[in-house]
Length: 189
Image 1 (cartoon, rainbow, N blue to C red):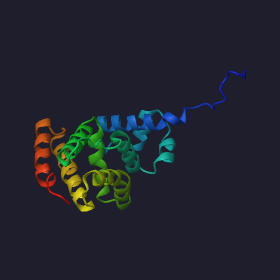
Image 2 (image 1 turned 90 degrees about the horizontal axis):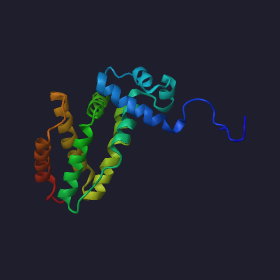
Image 3 (image 1 turned 135 degrees about the vertical axis):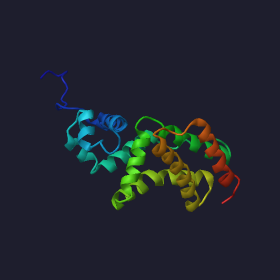
Image 4 (image 1 turned 180 degrees about the vertical axis):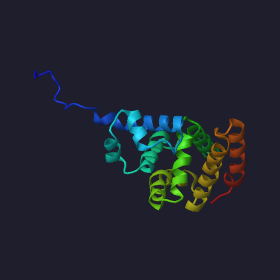
């Protein structure tokens, strides 16, 4: 081996595996639906071994939660007042849920969590808590009020996807914002 040849072992570079698996997860969920998007099918779509997936994520639910965290990133709390912050948060989550595969993955993992306490804990600790804490800090609201805000907004958006197979139309998102703001924006904690 010459001095200019890399000493990297053969195989896929590790740094990009998560990105490849997350993209494959969303495309598989989008194409086949959540229930038929098995870890086997996701791994095949990603071009990795099923063991590669299971080394990183112990279950499909844990994979979906990390995939959603990757898609969502930090909540962009934009605006100067409570109404602007809340409006930007609602529009942000509505936009994310409407991305191909994201709403399906979100609704599917929530559905699985109904009968899976371990998955509920993962959802709560890894997905909901970071956003709840960011909203609590930005809005100065107590935990129970922020949880209600999240329930109303996310529940409504996922219900629409479940009932129609489509994300909520922009006009309906605007109406949801108005309804939520009438309850929260001017009401001090």
